[in-house]
Length: 252
Image (cartoon, rainbow, N blue to C red; front, top):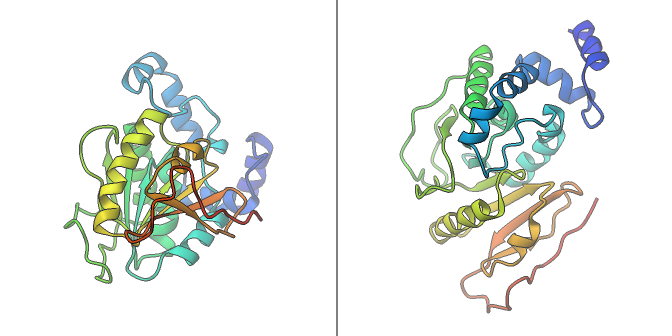
């Protein structure tokens, strides 16, 4: 495995990728380059199918993921036992899904992804690790109730009218155009009315200004990473202070 990892370091762009990230990817059997090549070879139909959405299918896979160290911090800080984690845009081969399925079998994972080819690669990686995809379970799962042991994956355009699954933590890493993000936030607000304790976690968010301008979300102090932001619904009894107000965060 180490020889394979050493060769990968010589042949792949790893400016932002730690040895831990690369080794775990190798163990999981990810083939991100194959996926990128597959999508590049069908540029025109892919562009037509996903026009207007932030799919970044021509970008380097090494720049389209969240580091495992950051996922571990989020998991330890924000996911108590029997929580439901919802990934809004799983990206290249769904690394968040695989990480949480292995490290947090006590929690339920629900993932959404627009690009079907990515979900197919994720299913292959899960199968290689002996992880089964769950049938869509009852929604919502009552808080504190044992969740389904395996992930539930959806190929879906979140700009459509279908509601979001109810969860405890929602996660996104720049998966949407601004218009789609606003549509997703409208759906998320409905979820917050049903579960006021939910949190929205963003990583390297390029569109934080859209979240800051909502009147129902506020940013919480966060020491998880310089690029992680945690957002919570404004308590119903709290007076509205106008759009764009937030509590701020600590940068580390």
